[in-house]
Image (cartoon, rainbow, N blue to C red; front, top):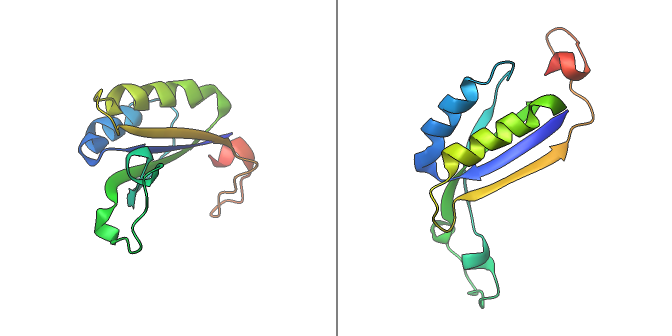
Amino acid sequence: MKHIIAYIKPHKLNSVTMALREIEGLSGMTILDVRGCGRGFCGDEPRPVEVDLYDFIKHVKIEVFCVDGMVEKVVSTMLEKAHTGLKGDGKIYITGCEDAIRISTGERGEEAV
C-alpha cells in the first residue's frame, strides 16, 4: 500500500478530484487547505525575523491511500490535472503504508483501503 500526498494550486482542486473519482477502485481521498512556502520563499533568501501567516502561499493538500497497483494511475492523473506549466504548480510525494485498519469492521491491510 502507498500513501500519496499532493500539494496543488487551489483553482485546480475541482479538476483533480473529479478525475480521481473516476479511477475505478480508488476508495477515497482527504482534502486539506494548507499554507506553506517553497524554494521561492523559503529558499536561500534571508528570512525576515517575523513572518506573518498570510505571507505563506495557499495550496490544497490531497491525501490518497491505495494499493501498489494503482499508484501510477493516481499519480499520472494528478500530474495531468494539476499541471499549469507555471512555477509553483505543487509537489507529489509517495510513501509506503505499513498497515491500514477499518475501524467499523476490523479489516486490515489492502481490504481496509
